[in-house]
Amino acid sequence: MPRKTYHHGDLKNALIQAGIHILAKDGVAGLSLRRVAGKAGVSHAAPYAHFTDKQALIAAISTEGYRRIHERIEAAVAEFEGDPSRQLLEAAWAYVDFALTDPAHFKITFSGVIEKEKEHPAFVEMSQKSFGAVIRIVEACQAQGVLAAGPSDLAAVSVWSLVHGLASLVLEGQVSHSLLDRMSVREMLVFSLNQMTKVPIP
Amino acid sequence: MPRKTYHHGDLKNALIQAGIHILAKDGVAGLSLRRVAGKAGVSHAAPYAHFTDKQALIAAISTEGYRRIHERIEAAVAEFEGDPSRQLLEAAWAYVDFALTDPAHFKITFSGVIEKEKEHPAFVEMSQKSFGAVIRIVEACQAQGVLAAGPSDLAAVSVWSLVHGLASLVLEGQVSHSLLDRMSVREMLVFSLNQMTKVPIP
DNA sequence: GCCATCATCTTGACAGCGTCAAGATTTGCG
DNA sequence: CGCAAATCTTGACGCTGTCAAGATGATGGC
Image (cartoon, rainbow over all chains, first blue to last red; front, side, top):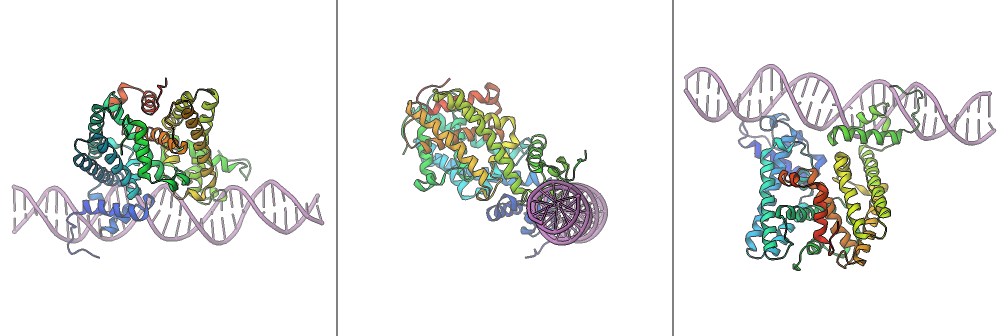
């Protein structure tokens, strides 16, 4: 479908959305600048008016992925105000659920496709924002004795390693079929988190 | 340097080794079939006599990566026979250390670049072998009360998620600089594992 | 010892890719 | 109104993965 105007109007966002759709349909391997441009209805070199190179587009797509996760984490925090262990579980589940729902988007966001993140400050900012939210949850858990005391940023890394690792292993098919038959990924998450917490969580 | 003989002799392994070297020098993005072929001293289409496509070569490189990790895990198990918590720590460290030493090799092995692993049985076999070793370590830990009782394959997934997640987050630069300044990755690993164990490990 | 067969490797081609340069078109500011 | 800047198109370049056709050499049967 050709556009009416020569200028697109909101090409930058259109490219990001087109990229996310292509990721969902054809995976990381299917994501090319030319296909993204085509899907947005512009010529193959048009993206260069908005992104310096393919890495920059990937960084923008990744940032959007991170933004969605952060959004859900904050929603979980708000919904279970005053219940840190539930906040921990639901924030972790938000992360894992995003990975399961949109695997390619998760992969491109967290699989180190971005080589030099320093050059993508928006991505770094989103990353730090999310990690800050996790630290606050962990601190609340520590205050209630749900998690062991200790440096909260360190404990947050431990918890987030667990959650990120579970999501990654499931996505990469490294979790045995016999285990996936016995229980859901959410149940695995609950079990895993309970290995760390001093008090059982639901 | 041109070869003496028309036939290479051991091209298949040479291609795998060349690929590993290129990964170490130029990262995942630098790995192309043609460069691998060039480094092995053969023409650009020669690899197709040994690998059906690029994915197959990547699978072979990944399998070799997995093999090295498995080797080190078994070495750790042998070295600390009768000391399950130490076995757990050193096996985990073998994993993380491999990731830190050869980041691109680790990434390509575990970052889901292989789309259909079902078609690469050697990779699946190596994966199951390694996971079996982890299960045995976890069972030994459970028997000594180092880890909580429960289904050992599930507990192994929890432990391995933690380890895999830590390696991944560090590699992707998602661990804050302020934390990396305060302590080594090995210390983070020890701390994280101690969050899960009932008995402190060194 | 010779020859046929087969695996191995080379050469050449193709479409798709990321990227850049030059030019066309439109917008918005002075 | 006019001109500079932003946006988009067109065309080109080298590199990529892959395939087809042919060259080369090793191997096993006679």
